[in-house]
Length: 177
Image 1 (cartoon, rainbow, N blue to C red):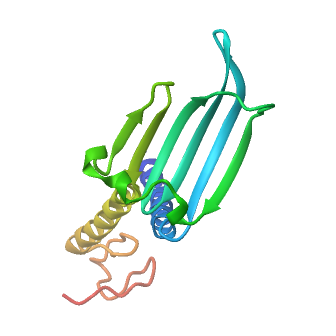
Image 2: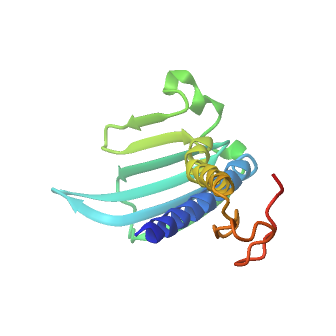
C-alpha cells in the first residue's frame, strides 16, 4: 500500500510539473501571441427559441479568460472547434481587464443572456501547479536526511552498519561524517 501511495504521489507530481511548465510557457507566450480556442455546440433548442452555445478559452497579456455564452444562432451552425491566433494588442483583454474596479486579477462576470466570463492571471495556475513538485523535493531531501541519520544508504535505503565504506546494494559511497 505504501508503494502504491508513493507511485501515485510521483505520478501526480510529474503531471503537476508538466502542467506547471506548460502554464509558464503559455504565460510567457501570452505577451507575444494571443490564442483563442473556441467550441461552438451548434444550434440547440431551448424552450421555444433556437440558440447557439459557445465556450471559449483565451490567453493574452498574462491572463486567461474562460467564457461560456448563449447567442443568437448563425446560419447552419454545427458543432465545431476553432483556434485563432492574433497579437495581444488586438485582444480585448488589455490592461483594463485587470483594473481593480473590474474585480481585480480574479473576475467573474455574468451577462443577461445567461453567459458568464471568468478572468484570472496565468501565474495563479503556475503557482498552484508548483505545490506538488515543491512537496516532492521537500520529501526527497527529508527522506535522504533521515536515511543518513539512521546509517542507511541515501540512494537506495540499504542498511550500511555492516559496510560503512560502500553500499553493497547500489555501490554508492556514503559521505564521511
